[in-house]
Every structure is written in structure tokens, then in C-alpha cells.
Image (cartoon, rainbow, N blue to C red; front, side, top):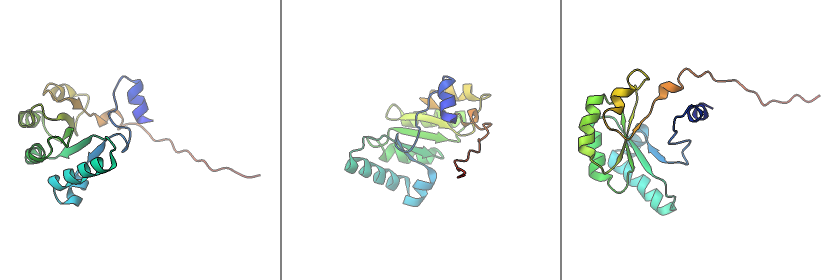
Length: 145
């Protein structure tokens, strides 16, 4: 429901579920043992299954960005710069060049989004759009009379 509300409001959801794009988050990277191994496993899967899925990888710092740039070219489509400050994003973008799409994510609010957009990233994710949404508790139980 939240994603549909964003769409209706004029926003763009780049992923609705795991079927849209492979997203390598920090826990996947940690489980694989390294960024390089996580990229390799995801890329091998995409090639073997011929899914055509793009791969996005979360980076937590500049060192992560350096590793993705070194091993992900031709494999990774998008680098997520997670919880980076705008000045860190500017540094990351210099390293990335035009080889990957980039996405700023984490800690971005309606109050600071302009500073993130001004960095030149391709995408800005704003979870704050839906953080205040209240879940509706629905039950699908039927009473048999």
C-alpha cells in the first residue's frame, strides 16, 4: 500500500519486490564473506538462470565503493550509498564515474533531500515518505454459522 501511495503521489518505486532487481544488502555481503564474493554469487546466478535481473549493491563507506568499482564493472548496475553524508556522496561519485547508476539512501528526509539531490546521484530513496504510515490490521478469518 505504501508503494502504491508513493506512485499515486508522483514518486517512482524502482523496486516492488525481490523479483524486480537483486539487492545485495549488508547482511548478504556479510554472509558471503565479502563484497567481491557477494557480487560473484549474484552475477553467476543471473547468468546461470538467465533472469536478466539487474544487481544493486549497498555500500556502507568509501572503501566499499572502491571494492565495488574494482570488481563490479559489467556485473553491478547500481551502487547504493547507504547513510552517506552529501560530501561523502560527492567523493564516491568521483570514484564511480559513469560506470554505475548511483542511489543515495538512509537518513534522507524531506528537509535534507535537496542537498542529496544536488550531489548528482541518479536516484534518491526517501523512506521518510512512508515511515509515518500506520498499518491496517486486517483479518481474513471467516465465521461459519
